Image (cartoon, rainbow, N blue to C red):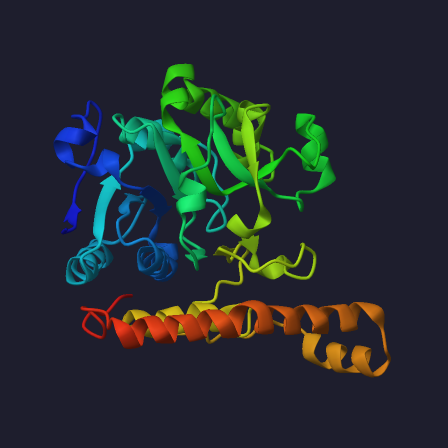
Length: 341
């Protein structure tokens, strides 16, 4: 399998014509602009390591040509079936954005059903996620007539929920979704979401809140392990993740010592890509507070320490050992031969 760089604009030929066999494999889609390129490379690599037969689509929402060429070369060297596609910019050019925190890349996922017209289902993941497991459980989710499968967010401000009349236990995070593409096309979901975005331009989460209001009542709820918020490890149920989501501004390719940065860095080194590790330090007195809190027997600091111990023992160490065994049995064909931004 080889990768190719394509530009897709409506009207489009059928997927079966352009990419023979794509319908028969797991389809994983992400979207990125140039701000997320380091995370994008590691997302593709990590998802492929655990799902070798998957077909990948990267929606180009502002990736520099040099980075696109490097992505193609990396995928070719490793035998990753990855296609770089472009969304119809006219559909999303007038939608509100929030600087680097929310660019038009966030809206590209809404167009996936139109960009893959011959596919009935796809997994969508943000480019700041890291896949640490086989995704067959996510791919095989029985959607029925539901529009999406997703994980309850749980951390959206109450004001945001009140504005759209939703409860906390029905609002999902849009960073990891299994999408019913056939139902989206049939029911005109993309146009309905874009209309809602324009109506609620003051919403803090814009695309995510608009998506939630439109798909409400037609959602299959998934376990937290499929969209594990790295920064919220203290506040969510303890469970080894299958997809780590480095949501928020502290990305592991920029900052060091963010939660689960050691997992990201292991994949970074394992990939052979020249992606630098995080160098910035978060302005925080967390370490000093932790020591004082532990000495003072304060409950929240001991809870944090126990959570750190749990994930190191139950997830981080076993996972890294399994990756070491994987590498020793089957070295990667392209390791160490490609540079990325």
